[in-house]
Image 1 (cartoon, protein in one colour):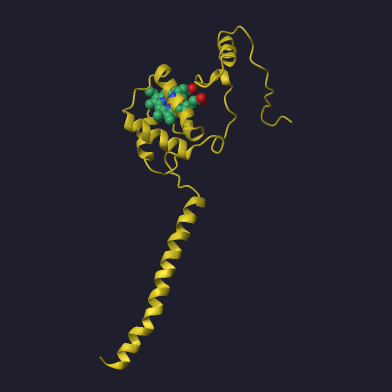
Image 2 (cartoon, rainbow, N blue to C red; image 1 turned 120 degrees about the vertical axis):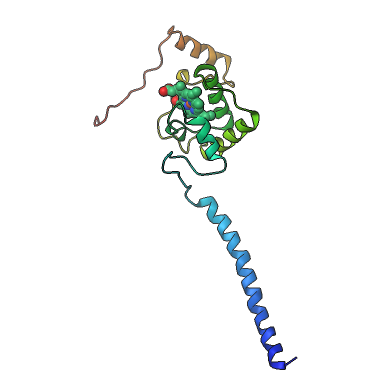
Amino acid sequence: MNPKRKIGLMSTLPVGAAILLSIGGSTADTKEADKTAPKKIDAASGMIIAKNWQTVRAMCSSCHSPKLFTNYGGTRETWAGLIDWMQKKQGLWEFPPAIEDQILTYLSDNYPPGETSRRRNLPAYQRPPNPYTSEARAEYEKKLREGKIKPPLIEQKKDGEK
Ligand code: HEC
């Protein structure tokens, strides 16, 4: 082998190593960036684009605007309770378990409690029944629904009012 060529090869080695290292480094960086990157929003539906979002769009936006759930936030149990309530009271059909799992995972991952809720939570007595509620709370809510007692007065300010 021509000695000049050999030297040439040797000198490219460190460069190769440096490139490999920088590739390794940059994937770690992208992963880190993914966590903090703003979520991509589908312009038409306003939904966060993430795994299975199209399934959720198909299943959850035929009766009402997706805004109803993009403004909402909850744990997996909250979402499951809400779907249950729509199935019992609002004519929502049953989902095959695999589909329901995809829906619940998408909703609880992308619309967790607190973060995405832009309006004040509904008072408890207007929400679907909470399976974890205490008996006392359940009785209180039942009486509210039956109109036996009045809901607590929450001061509501109109727009422009100080
Ligand atoms: C069969 C029709 C139908 C489908 C499909 C449907 N919903 Fe609903 N949903 C309703 C009705 C009716 C209401 C009550 C609307 C209202 O109060 O104006 C409602 C209300 C809601 C609310 C508001 C609840 C509140 O407390 O204000 C959310 C959130 C919601 N739906 C999410 C979903 C999700 C998520 C899906 C998909 C799994 C879905 N909906 C699919 C009928 C449906």
